[in-house]
Image 1 (cartoon, helix red, strand yellow):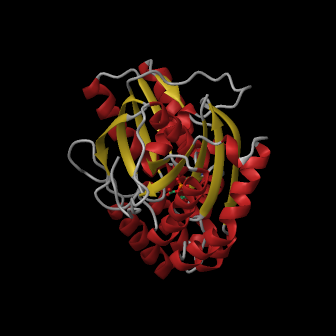
Image 2 (image 1 turned 45 degrees about the vertical axis):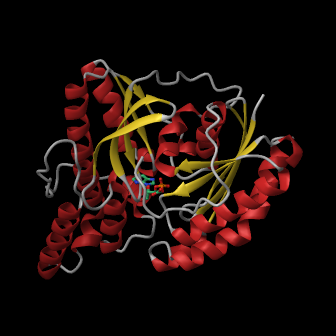
Amino acid sequence: MAIILGIESSCDDTSAAIIRDGILLSNVTASQAVHEQYGGVVPELASRAHQQNIIPVVDAAIKKAGITNEHIDAVAFTRGPGLLGSLLVGTSFAKGFALAQHIPLIDVNHLQAHVMAHFVRTNDDMRPLPEFPFLCLLVSGGNSQIVMVKDYNKMEIVGQTIDDAAGEAFDKCAKVMGLPYPGGPVINKLGNLGNADRFQFHKPNIADYDYSFSGLKTSFLYFLRDEMKENPNFIEENKNDLCASLQKTVVDILMQKLHKAVKDHHVKRIAVAGGVSANSALRDAFVAYGQKYHCDVFIPPFAYTTDNAAMVAMVGYYKFLANDFCEPNLPPYARVTI
Ligand code: KG4
């Protein structure tokens, strides 16, 4: 039997989870509303909030799981990528906890954890889990990648963004329209009320399986600037159609490259992960793709799309089984690949 404590603090969510033998017992997350007024995450405020939240969050996760500190066999923590000041809080806490309990430490790659969200399940969750190999579209605020998942601990990047991430494009375009942060969910909500074919925006022409979203962002900005010269109320009068068209463009870009990767790698299973996988247009596109090309499609429950410690504990569980532990002096990394 193995009980793993997972800790996530890479950006603006402080989260702790307990997994016993691969089954989730608890997952407690404290989000940080403090950033809303700034239109984006302020790193210094994020790390201070993590410091305030980490002990109550871990305490709540352990209590909710119905265990005590002594039952925990290992601590898995997000080592990177993320905001360094935020990562330092989770990393330092995990090291202190492991030292005090005389248990091993497991470092976790945040991107691998997003993919492993597909394997997080509670006792009463009977949804089918992906078999290996499968291609996972990993789309969050900081990353957009296509990952070939060969095993729990064996993943390779097939393609990735050469500039902005898909979530970043949503957030920045939302900011230009004066929408609140994070913009992705707001664009999703308004976009579902609008006409997605009303406006056409820039689609990149990038080689292989890589993505680019900076051109779309710039074309969106210039388009609004020109329209606002003619009609200062243009954004207000067309908000739903703007959101719908932008959302469709991002989803088209994501699905086009995924399709190329599926064809070239001859896979029959696709999955989506990361914060942007909460987007309903993207989820619909995945379902439609599965029907059209006879692929098995895996979409994670909403609770595990954005940052959470359950996915971190899941990576930790499989690394624990493989005796893959880390030294207590391992520093966090702001940038790493899978
Ligand atoms: O994975 P995540 O929680 O954090 C990172 O590790 O980046 O992803 C956050 C990103 C943000 O850019 C947010 O706008 C986006 O996910 N997001 C969405 C939706 N929900 C969250 N984007 C589009 N539609 C959504 N429903």
